[in-house]
Image (cartoon, rainbow, N blue to C red; front, side, top):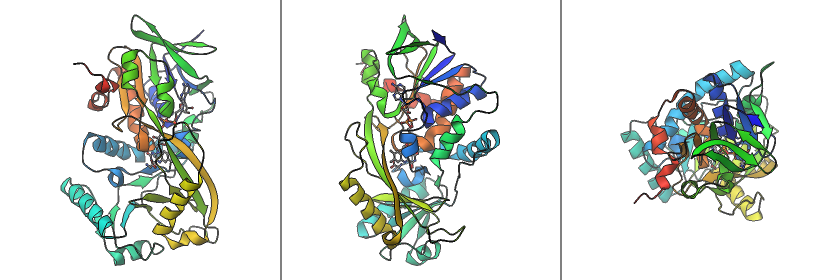
Length: 381
Ligand code: FAD
Ligand code: GLY
């Protein structure tokens, strides 16, 4: 029998961020139970690493504010990971461009410009000449763009490397290979979790199991509240080998209304992504690759000569309203959820880790843990 103070089910960027924050808050015996044995191999590695609240939002709602707050934590998060673990997560603060190619796209960017300006957000409108000056390698068919100076990017795989790296003599994070099927309760209070082979005991259990969240057995009400669907995202990456050291074909993260490209420090350029409700399928398909090539070629003719390096797919965890599931489940003391981050889990990792850990360690209640509590899906009438 193994006993801990907190058990976290799932070692993606969310589970790992919570483990780190628990440690900062003085909680010592934390176990991450991970079905792959190794952390961070699923959506958290598949992601594009964009920190883009403004490029992805349609209005200034609670979710947008949650994303902004997490984005604002990133400079310190990056600095701390460098200091603590010696890993540079490549926070790039150049900003993001959102392109328009026709009248319809122009209307779309005009709508975004208006609500974001009215909300007091930093956003710039660029014409063809401005765009050619900042990104000369884009398609000549670009007719306008928005620039979001505070939408950034990171190398998400380096976040995982940093979060799993232990300092000398450190026991945390303790990662236990285990696929959890069931939770253990005593009078409605959670007391642990169970795989086919083993039981693990703790007064606090955090479900951070991403797209697989609904596969764990729950009580009826909880099951009703945590319907998480896997949404496949296919990606590809190119390299630009003919560039000299320090040269980059693109400076910004670049969105079109159909997809995005992300230029990385090591000269790779990621192209993403499909959004497909196809269950637990990881395959990269012909149709997926064709749509990614279309996105790439629309954004820049340069892709015709770049070298295709790799393709992959990951599963985003999506809830019925597209918002995360966060906080303690009201009917089951000690049972916490931190999942359903859908298209923004990398962006939201710092704030999720902080709020969940502060609630567990110190009882600090953030309004966000109420707004995104999974009990919102229970029909109490
Ligand atoms: P995961 O990383 O999937 O981790 C969940 C972990 O739980 C896994 O390791 C899994 O093995 C484990 N697990 C599951 N069930 C069990 C069980 N029963 N027992 C034990 N372990 C279990 N977000 C951004 O912010 N910016 C982006 O640019 C971005 N781009 C994306 C591009 C693509 C193609 C995809 C697929 C996603 C993208 N996302 C992006 C979304 C982001 O990747 C996810 O929201 C985030 O990684 C979710 O993290 P997680 O830790 O909840 O899930
Ligand atoms: N946020 C980018 C994606 O989910 O594809």
